[in-house]
Image (cartoon, rainbow over all chains, first blue to last red; front, side, top):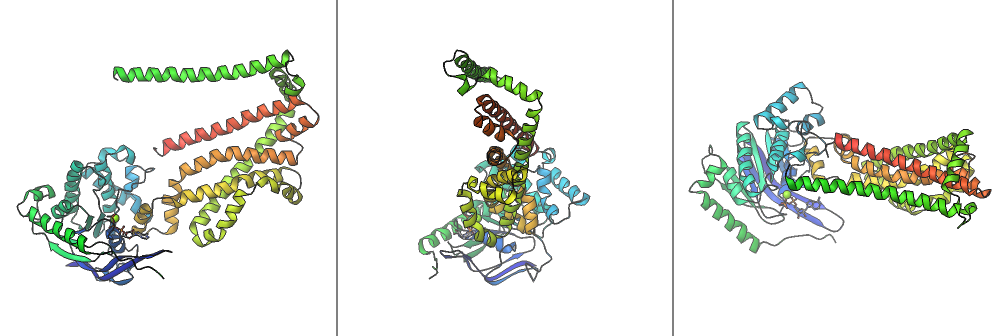
Length: 264
Length: 264
Ligand SMILES: Nc1ncnc2c1ncn2[C@@H]1O[C@H](COP(=O)(O)OP(=O)(O)OP(=O)(O)O)[C@@H](O)[C@H]1O
Ligand SMILES: [Mg+2]
């Protein structure tokens, strides 16, 4: 079943000096339970797309439908995990994780119980009273993920969730996050500019051009869905997908030209 | 603990002791030198007074109950100005953060007021408010408030945009963004503003007293210089040093408590 649908979405940033078109006619769909990757060069508009999906910005033209309704009108919930964990340093992990319910005025015994359950389940039980500065990068990332899960979102939007981690931690945390999302049976859209990561995590990858982002190609990844990302990296078809996406990004980078329509 | 760490700690301890020792010696040398110069008439003590004369006059003031009166008057004006300016300045900064239109409209005026030497407004204040405590407190407020507004506002505006996005994705309204993010994130800004305001509020109250008053340390200083009682001038200055240092120490303690509470 289609959970999320983008149709010809365009978006520009306006400032005094220029109009920056960040998203140009982007269309794709996300099915329920699917893991969708968005990949593209730095600064192409990936974060912008996520912010559009989260309803923080409205598209200049085109439509975004969540469960068949506009994002602003939909009752389905979206959980955004921003680039870098953005935990609040003055709050304990527990209190950070309960930020969402607090903002929505739903901080009560039930949400607290659920938050603690998730924290314990995913190995943060001993750290609930600690401050973010006392945690490792991987633990902070997990905390940030739990902060979004506490809101019981129908769809998770992850913005380069692993970019702040070193290579080895990255692979481990990637496995962690993947298994948490699968266990909680969530749909996820994940932004990355690491091809390996994307292929190992996702069922479908949207490859974007340089800014303004438009869809270059949508690639289905037919690797075993039940395997962990680390295992999937070892499967035979893996290098093929890598090569294909690499080629796409490379070709496009040579050909594409960046458009900045100057205001006159 | 390793040998090297022990050595390091020991070295550190010695260094701290030495620092304190030098501080005390410096003060003792200053006071002793001053006393000797005055006692042996190297410079006329009528002009430079002397530590023993200062102690004597403080004793006399204390016995007559004058000391209390003047100290309390100055402290009252300074602390009132300090608190009013910090509170009102912060509220004003919140209002300006809330409305960017108002911010743009008022910007040139705030900048002008900031560069204006507030002391120039002294005579006007006296004409408007008469001689007395309100005028002096107003002077102190005037000197502190503009820099409070500017510092707090720039702190508010430099909060990480991504954190704001995160809250927006949780459907936080502007009020929630203010209370959950902007204000707690700026506790360190507030502390540094407090530190600046300790100094500035003393400037305000003493200048106010110079201009118009019948009591307070500023009054004593002016009065003492008019009747060529340098002992009185020096004694008041010394008391002023102690009071201002004490107030700064109080803010430093507050800072420590806050830092502990927020785990930073
Ligand atoms: N608030 C803004 N105002 C103006 N331009 C912006 C704004 N935010 C982003 N842009 C521009 O829009 C383009 C896309 O930004 P976006 O953050 O979506 O890129 P990205 O693909 O997420 O990049 P990265 O890989 O570096 O995270 C960039 O060129 C950026 O300069
Ligand atoms: Mg980005």
